[in-house]
Image 1 (cartoon, rainbow, N blue to C red):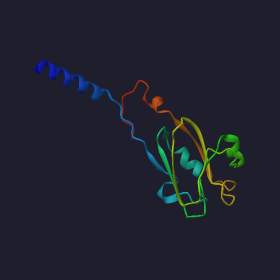
Image 2 (image 1 turned 180 degrees about the vertical axis):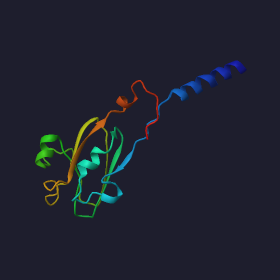
Image 3 (image 1 turned 60 degrees about the vertical axis):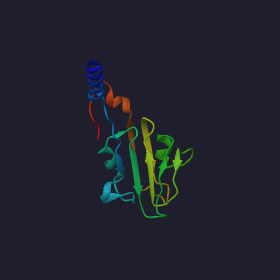
Image 4 (image 1 turned 30 degrees about the vertical axis):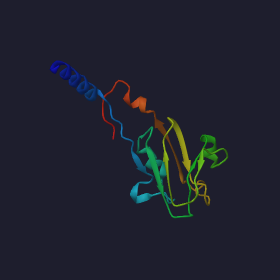
Length: 140
């Protein structure tokens, strides 16, 4: 009986040792010093980050001043168009989105010419499986 428990313990320990943990990151858009308030280089901010599937992005801004649009594609993003948008937030002062789908994501504010004035950014969401293939590590 002791051998059976020892075998189960060894099997469980092996599985735990080989497991990979993924911790989704909560990105504060613009970081604490910028926020989502315009007149910032949000593309430079996005370029400095790595976005994985299941990460979240928090947008915090003055109520009624801005919003968050997830454009359907690059063409809509380039035109600052909300037509067919995947999501358009109300200008409530704070929004959070989750990076559900791997691939490109196009974000902008459609309020008061924000997008035309550069309040936008794009990035690629990396599939969780791409970060794990053949690797055993912890992602923070």
